[in-house]
Length: 251
Image (cartoon, rainbow, N blue to C red; front, side, top):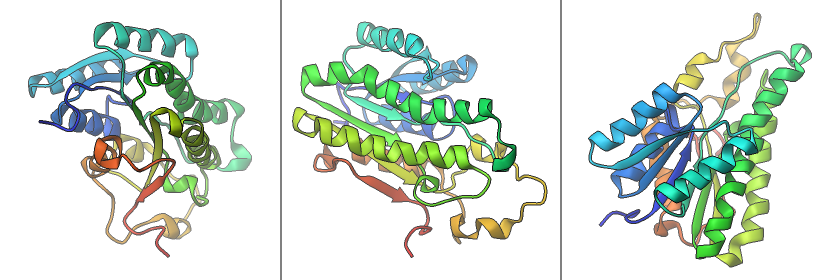
């Protein structure tokens, strides 16, 4: 028996990186997985990968920044598989930019995907979870939401917002059968990390606080943490912000 047998899991940002690793991990442990992403080609590939390994998955094209995209997608998941009992919000974007040169468009896009998108997905699954009296939500923040990181004001603001959003939802729903937690990982070997380039003149020494001496995590390692928290093994975890960052925030 898998920890997620007979459960429906929705994973955003599941076309690549941590989202894809998480979707694969939950499927391997028995979950039926709704693979949610805006990248249709990679999302279909991720869902097919799960099916080829013997799991059950379907891709749903969703722009998490828009309720008009989120709401029908959740309705489709309900119709196709049933009521989700697990939601993992992995969808995220970011880039390095000097704050004095930041554009409103870029700021709003990062906040939109990372923070508004996380809320809208929670909003989408909560009615079903409350109706069944069972649900586990994990929001992916970052250690950049815990302390400052240069050249990434929008990203830090969005991830800090995810932390307090998580706490707010946790206290609101803890007595109604829905657990809400967040993780705050450090650097991971993902396509998003590879896409970040430093502004001209920036020095690596400025990032010393946010760099672990043991390097970057594998997405599968962080996915293991998510699987624990969302499973019944994490039953008593509510409103926690769990770090897994190679010791960056230990001192």
